[in-house]
Structure formats: structure tokens, C-alpha cells
Image (cartoon, rainbow, N blue to C red; front, side, top):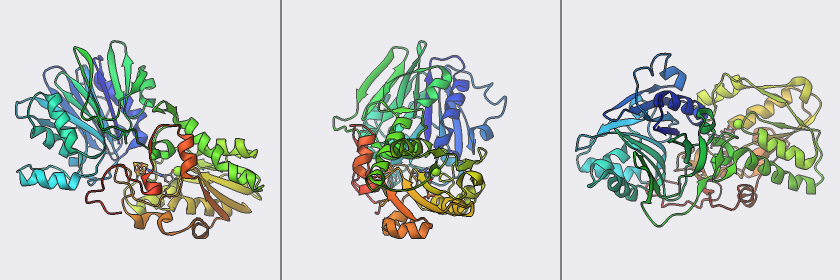
Amino acid sequence: CGVFGVYRQSDAAHLTYFGLHALQHRGQEGAGIAVADGKTVRCRKGKGLLSDVFGRNDLDGMTGKNAIGHVRYGTAGGGEVENVQPIVSRLANGGALAVAHNGQIANAAELRKELEDKGSIFWGSSDSEIILHLLQGTKGPLIEKIKQACNRLDGAFAFLILTEKNLYAVRDKNGLRPLSLAKQGDGWCVSSESCAFDIVGAHLVRDVRPGEIVKISAAGLESCFYTEETSCNLCAMEYIYFSRPDSVLERQNVHGVRRECGRLLAQEDLDNFFKADIVVGVPDSSLSAAAGYSEAIGLPNEMGLIKNRYVGRTFIQPTQAQRDLGVRLKLSANVPVVRGKRVVLVDDSIVRGTTSKRIVALLRQAGATEVHLRIAAPAIKYPCFYGVDMSTRAELASASLEPDVLAKVLGADSLRFLSVDDLKQACGCQGLCTACFDGSYVTPLYSNKI
Ligand code: 5GP
Ligand code: SF4
Ligand code: MG
């Protein structure tokens, strides 16, 4: 998912719309905006893309200087409208509160059961609602309630809370999901990714730190931590696939990291005097890695695949049937470019193998004589419980198949992945979650099964 918020901006709802527009790649199942004018919190949300939910005049009545918004990519919880965010609720003291959450709570099942046993009634099936119920059950000023709630939550969460007057931004103690802070005039912006700041004219200040709660109010910005046990384990998949190339996460530009992944991927082929004619990246998420690979190996980077811009992200479609159709609608081979060529096909990752299999076939039909798959990420062997939709081993192509066998299944002449060490090197020195590659989860698993 993607979250975006603004504080002290005239036209907060419109700015949030534009911010969410820049985050649309993070989720396409639902969108919503909540705005506060000092007295009340109003919310509008619905299923689908931002442009499906908000028509031309839909934001006109949403006046107020503070707002938060959300684009939904469902991992926990189904696609029904109850799970679309922000979720608005009232606290026992009568105050209104809107929450927008990105991530996945690892101990959601346990917390939900506990809350239901105590009498909580949930509207939907998404784990984000748990945050609201936990807030409701705690005592003291809101900041204290948030601290107590966060100490019960484990897993991945970056969330925004909007009240009538204030905005809170929270990041889990492992920093699994990204969240950045920006200055805009005398106001503030918070976003899952910095790419959304440019569009509203805000300037990146820093990331919200793991375990940090930032409160933005008339008094300015205040920061505290809900725990001292913090570490930085940003999801590696944010760099590999999820984020936009122009975003800066933990001070690393996403495009730069991907290009470095491509460069490092080429090393072993260089050492082995590997022969091919052209490098082709899969648009859009692999183009940076393909550029790095081609630079390092000294082969031309060609536009061998064309993407239809009017089809959404295939992986994010919830069912396999939708994903299969999505790939077919989305990509075409550029026949004159690939005909008669030995192609190195660079993709960002293999999850289920749907995309790679289809693309290898496309290139062969277009006359490529050899297709060598190079993946600018390690093999994904373990499920993710932190907000990326790959939650069972059975669906992961690399969980059971070694690269040479998988190459045959996918119809490729050869297949190589980036090593976990090279990935860490490309991402810079900060900590990284690599659990889906090496099984080293940064939290307990609770009831999640590997
Ligand atoms: P596959 O087709 O192997 O199931 O998925 C791989 C394709 O989906 C890649 O082309 C990649 O661009 C995209 N993708 C890879 N990893 C992820 C991920 O972790 N999350 C999402 N949403 N998409 C991914
Ligand atoms: Fe990201 Fe993989 Fe960790 Fe999930 S397990 S948070 S996809 S690196
Ligand atoms: Mg792709």
C-alpha cells in the first residue's frame, strides 16, 4: 500500500490526491482520502484506482488544511470495500480519528482474537483495523495510546493517524516499510515514498526512523520512540520492485540501487566470457537493472519489449487468472530488435514465474535464437508476512526448483539470480530484510506458516 499525508496546507485534499497519484503503483485495489479542518474529519474512499474513486468535483467539499490518504494493495484481508482506507473511527472521548496503514501485522491473528474475546467488533478483514481497536483499548493522551498500541503490534507497519487537529506518523521498530518526511512551506508532508513529494513541491527532510512516532501539530514537529529496541530492516523488495525509481529510501536512490544490482549481476557472466548479442530489460521495473547489466558487460541495451502503459501492475492483481491475462495484455516483443539475436533478458524478480515464462516465449516467437534470463534479485524461496503478497511457499517458483531446473520450466537457455551478498552491497550498508530470500525473518512468525 501507499500512504500520504499533508499538514497545514491550503487545499490539503487536492494535494493528497496528487501525492497518492504518485504512489498509485503501490496499490490499485482501493483509494481514499480523509481531511480534517480543526473540527471534524471527513473521508471519501472506494474500490479501484484513485481516478475511479475521485471524480472531478468529489474533493470540492473536502475542505481543511490537514489530510491523509491511502492506496490499497491487499495482502491481509479481502478486496471488499470495508478494507479500503483510511478507516475513520471515534475514540471513547468523542474525538474523530482516521488511520491509513501500509504493511502487515505479523501477530494479527493473535491480536484480533484477543480483541474479539474482549468484545471488539471488526468491520472488515484487514489487519489495519486492529490498530484502531488497540488505540481504543488504551488510556492517556493519544501519543501514549499510540505508544502502547505499537508495543502490542509486531511486523510491518508504517501508518498515519489524522485527528481533527493533528497528524501522527509511525514506523515499526524494524523499519520494514518505508516512510519519509518532507517540508513544504510552513507545513509538512509524509509519504511512503519520496517520489510523491516532488509532485506537490515538498522537499525530503528525512525518513521517519524505525520505532519513531512523529507528531505534527500547531506546536510543530515532535518526535518520540515507542521502544528502544530498534533496527533498520527495510524490505529489500522495495528497492527491487515495489518503489518508484525516482524515490530515495534510507538515503539511497531506487534507480541507483537497481542499476548496481544489474552491474553486480553481470560480474559472473563477465568472468565466464558469456556470449550474447543484446540485453533486454522488462519494462518498467527492470529497466534500471538492465542498464547496469549492459554497462557492466558491454552489450547494447535494446528496447526488445514494449509495455502497454494502460495496463496496471500484473503482480498486484489478486488472482492468478487476472495476472495471466494481465501479462498478455501488457507486454509485446519488438520483433525487428530481437529477431536472430541471442538475448540476455533481465527481470527484477521471479515470484510465481508467470511473467518470465510468458516473456521468454514471446521473445522466442519473435525470433530470438537464445534467451538467457538474468534476475536482478536473489531467488525468492520463503513467503513474506510483512506486506508483499507472496504468503505461501507453494506459489514460489524458486522454493522447490533449482535455477537450472527452473530455467527449463520457464523455457530459458540459462538462468541466474543475484546473490544475497551482492543485493546487500547494492543497497548500501544499512540493514535490510531479506527473509524471502534466506528465511531470516526479523520478527517472530506467530501463527504464520513457512
Ligand atoms: P511472477 O510473474 O514471477 O509471479 O512475478 C514476477 C513479476 O512480478 C516481475 O516481473 C516483477 O516485476 C513483479 N514482481 C516481482 N516481485 C514482486 C513483488 O514482490 N511484489 C509485487 N507486487 N510485484 C512483484
Ligand atoms: Fe520484503 Fe521479502 Fe522481507 Fe517481505 S520478506 S518484507 S518481501 S524482503
Ligand atoms: Mg516486471
